[in-house]
Structure formats: C-alpha cells, structure tokens
Image 1 (cartoon, rainbow, N blue to C red):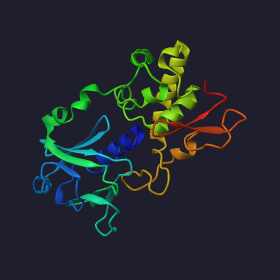
Image 2: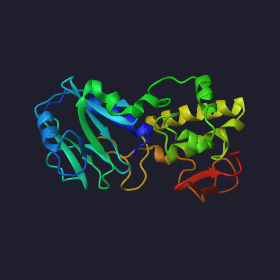
Image 3: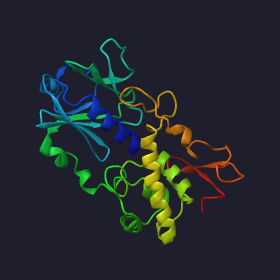
Image 4: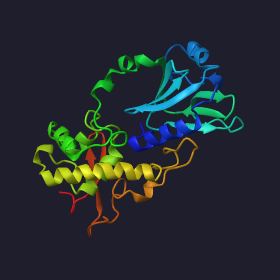
Length: 277
C-alpha cells in the first residue's frame, strides 16, 4: 500500500475536493472490492448520500457519509484513488466509481485488486478493524517526542529496518521510507535496536520526522509509470530527493562509493556501506 506521506496527502485532497459533495450514482464494475455490505446494499446506501468528512486512521482512509456511516478505504500497493470528470476514459482496473451531483467522480482503480472498501456505522470502525488498537506512532498526525520514540524503539528487539516497518511502532513506513530514514540517520538496516546509543536514537528520531514531513512537503513519491499519484492524478516530486532507495550502483551522496543493494526478507534494502554503521 502507499506509505504514510502519500496516504496523508490523499486525506488532505479528499477533505478539500470531496467533502460536502452529494453522491448522484455509484458503480462497482470490479469484483472483490466491496467487503461490507453486499454490493447491492453498498450502492443503495451511498446513492443520494452526502460526504460529510474525510479522515485517516493509521493507513485507512475514511469518508463520513451523512454523519452516520464511514466509507473505509484500504489501498493496495498499486492502487490509485483519483478524481476524474465523467468524460475521462476509464482507468485500468477500476473497481469503484462514485459520481457526485457536482464535481465529477471519485474512482478507485487497482488492477491487482489489493484494495477494499467498506461501508460501516461510524461507531463500528474500531470493532471492524481491531488492529487499530495496537497501531504505533503517527509521524504526521501527532507530535512525537524523541524520548517517547526512544522508549517505544527500545521495547522492540530486532533489526532496525524491520522495526521501522512494524505498524505497532510506526504507522505507514514501508521499504522505501525506511531506507531513506536509515540513510539520513547513518545507521545500517541490520543494526539491533538494543545496540543503539542515545545519540543514535536521537538521529533516528530526527531522520524519521524530517523524512516523512519532507515527503509530504514535496507531494509524495512516484516511482514508475504505474506509481502513486495524487487525487488529481499528479505524480509526487519527492522521488528526485531519494538518496538510496532503488539507486544501487550510483555514487553515495555522502561517500566515494556506490549505493549497495542487499536482499532483505522478500525484497531488497538499499544503503551506503561507508556511512551507515
């Protein structure tokens, strides 16, 4: 799924572009997207309703519906949530289309079908998604002190990259931003949390907060033609500021040596051998 900066940008776009819009019609051309209720009930409940709020709980995007229900959107790795005009051609893998009385359409497109939508009573969000009770720190939504960050970090015994991507520690940090954070902190991906000094924890804390906020500032990261785009379909500009992620073989920004690519779990990690210790 998109990482924290991209999800927060979508939330802000939805708040600006969709709130106070009335739903004229709903289409669900894709299969497997609507989890709750049935497709027929989903279409019936949304048609004629008003979008009253836009929010984010951890990595879930939410739209208030008539102040009584929530449209909960979980985006898959290659999903796109975009606002289009009725005349615009269909997006590949379109699964859900919400047409407003004014202001075009909201479309969820995901050729790989890793996304889902649910329409639930507002008060049922926590019960429907019990994982929300154990989510970690949100580097965008709440101020984080370095002491709180350090305390939470030292409660976990593992390699730094794995810990950064643990949603019970940090919300919405995946392979890309974890690599960038570790580079800016000057720490290797396989360092044990218990081996960090107070100074290294401070560096990691600062790198986490600054990397996430810089990514939001520059509109998120778009990699490849099928990469993430904003609600208006615009690619993010933070990709030009990436220092190590998918830059293996290039010269490190801080050393006279190349960025290295190493196997990590089911994927890869990217880092500078000379400056990350």
